[in-house]
Length: 253
Ligand code: OAD
Image 1 (tube, protein in one colour):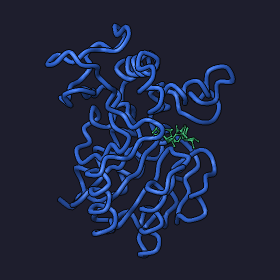
Image 2: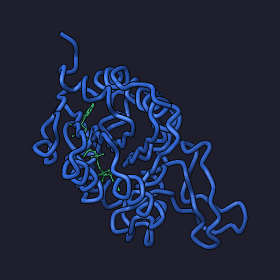
Image 3: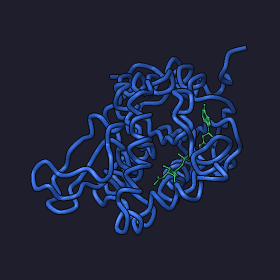
């Protein structure tokens, strides 16, 4: 028997547009730690709560060196990681269908490196920076070398990381893109992959698709709050199921 149920294979063959939502689980097979669960960044009994505190707006305002210590170490790990079969399968699906959008909570940049194009990185990018004084945007090339708070090459102001920290708003233009891609035109198929689905803006596009009678799929080794709402729950690794899904989707462009 194949990896996917026969009725899912049949449904995937009819799909013309795909929306995908990803979380840290898709990068677990690349060696990037997840946030929650065993071995996750917040799971560490010694450092978990301190990590959350370091990655917060009040800490950035009070003690940016502390925020940067955590960000620079995490950014260096992302640079060293490589995309896996799950990331590549999503880029393959994008190349096959008429319309594709990838809403990711991940800040590791692995989707872009695998070739995905229409990405909404709602929580930002660990290698991105913005000056807290003049606003100029930039990118880190060697995060492992950062000591203290890096300085702006234009005005010498202090840089901030280009990620959404605890206590910060989501970027308005990215929220507007979610609206266009997932609500104004609900995709034929919406997949949710490797996330504990903690936030309403992650859960709602799946519920909107289910309500519109579209195909909904979850890929996760564990049960999550969204599991009861989807048509198919695929219990296992993204790197195993996504290539099978990519193979089942027809080329329509
Ligand atoms: P979590 O760490 O909460 O959840 C990771 C999920 O991936 C879990 O449900 C795992 O069961 C699943 N998983 C593990 N290995 C997997 C694999 N090989 N294939 C598929 N799934 C697998 O990560 P997120 O849900 O992404 O926000 O966390 C959401 C947000 O919370 C993050 O973006 C971050 C965090 O606070 C910010 O930093 C703003």
